[in-house]
Image (cartoon, rainbow, N blue to C red; front, side, top):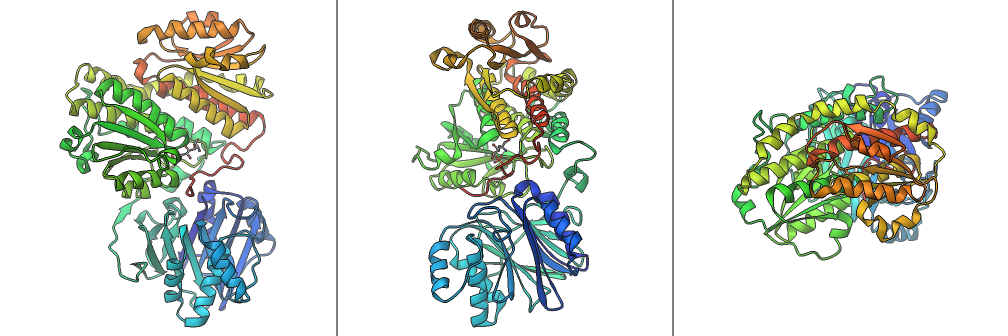
Length: 614
Ligand code: AGP
């Protein structure tokens, strides 16, 4: 979960590196550092704390500029966030400098060997082992490129490493295994980054570096080889968004900007895939021909965190429309429970970043057992997309805030498209066009929801001292209750828990005491199975015990107002599609409460945007 940048070219390396780290800071912000080569010497500056601490230090004691270098923002795994544990790590009497993203699983045995050879370590990190290994190889062979390839082969686990050598200031070496790396192709300059945000200011031409591949990067070109030194094929892709999309654009926070973009994220994800009659066109399925679907007897949706809750919504939609059995499994659980997966299983992996290691490991496990893998991903060229048989890209644009909002809305939308596609593929076409047309109205209805929930901020301010919030939902509202609780936890550090409303009387109602805040997602009065009445009954049960009830309900549902202290209304829509609207006030509520508590909305403590280690 670290941010990595590499550069070789005529521009100011300091500008390129620090600018790239700024765009990547959401990937980790415990510490930051850069190394460049000037006048035949390596210069390194690194500091614990956010990137601004390093920038301030560089202002106070400037480094000589250079035309090449590496930069790193850290999310601590081994060793606390201190200056000494910050990257880059230098070795060989400042001969080389190295940065690393991931976890080197065999670092302790390698460290023991290096210590036995008299190497002294300055940090507690696994990454420093790679630096000393490289320096030692280089000292023995005098060939930096070969030494780098040898070190890449010696490491086990998950790593993206970049290294520079003061004797060759025109070269940055990079390797990746189970960790993200993209190459930016410039004009007389070239870039490396954890994702394209690192260099999108300079070039929109990119190459995804594949598993067990190495890059030799120079200003006038680059080489891609495998870990055996053999050249590998590569394919360029164009980045479809520009730097402004990855900047705040005047908004107070990335999260506020990204919530405001939820209508567009939904609309762009639908674009070209649903016609005015509500018919679906998912060309992405080319890798999964229809006959494969006829062989499918179950679907496993796998993801982590917010993406898993999007998967839960997709489960309701697919089972209701396509009548195919669906289960949703947390990726880190699926991977290790020896699940029943075979060639009749379709695994759908959902991931905004496409680099979540838990999710990657789950799909690799499933592929090895014959399953077809379809991914729903928001990041072009991500590892998940490259390792899937087919990918439905969400088009939410870059999501920088650690708390996922617009990507979640887009993931749910992609789930509906998938459900409609599968229903058509399996001949369950009743009422599909009507639902497809309602889906087309969602972007406008999300925008209306944003306009209807302007008073959430004031309401959140009134609650800024609360210590716990419960969220209740039923049917498709249940995953939204879970999402609302997760957002509140990760942003305001308040204990929050989501429950299926029907579960309340089986235990959780014991938590209700006078003043307990409970947010209830009320099904539309038109919902089947009289869910609306059942949830109103749940509200009365907790009202009777003094709960402070906040309801999210459908416009026109006046009955709920009799039982709730506050109601946030959303426009009418098909009950199955209501999550795209009902989640909006919950995203705003969690952001506003965090703001009221003076917390960092975009970079909450202990978190990172993409969890690229298991
Ligand atoms: C969401 O707000 C969290 N930041 C987290 O749960 C996230 O959804 C999860 O880590 C999955 O990330 P991915 O979508 O990039 O795989």
